[in-house]
Length: 171
Image (cartoon, rainbow, N blue to C red; front, side, top):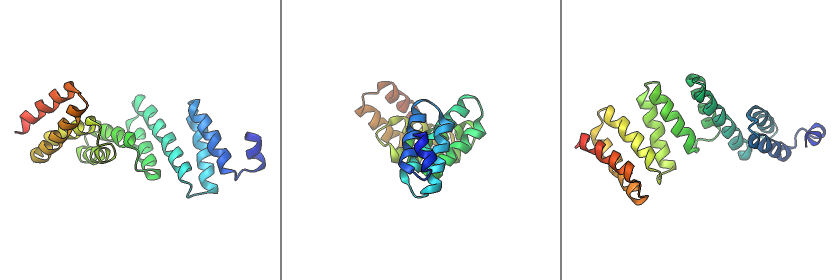
């Protein structure tokens, strides 16, 4: 495939296949290079944008794991510029913003997470905790009740208990 790209560097489908192969092997930078090149040849290619967003998100995860929080936030934000509909990116950014004591930004990301993944109770729990901490009790109560319902449907009894504990605070 590298030979094919040497002969036809504008071959976006070949670049996408090679990038996917690199991602499977955990070679994030190599995948990123192929995807960035693919976007040079076809700037509107959604598959290239989505793939590059995934590569940036993986880099963000790695940076966060190494304690490089600010750099991780930058990488996740780059991912969102390419594809704002990735729930995991919003979840990770929300947690990092919370860690950086930026509750308003964290709240925005958890809101978006819930809109993208309403069936996952964890987003409601994280958002509810932040809203309680920020004194937004009325909104917190609504979010916590919604999340509690989601957790009940999924039989997540431990989370139901956490929702109940937080609801006791706001009521």
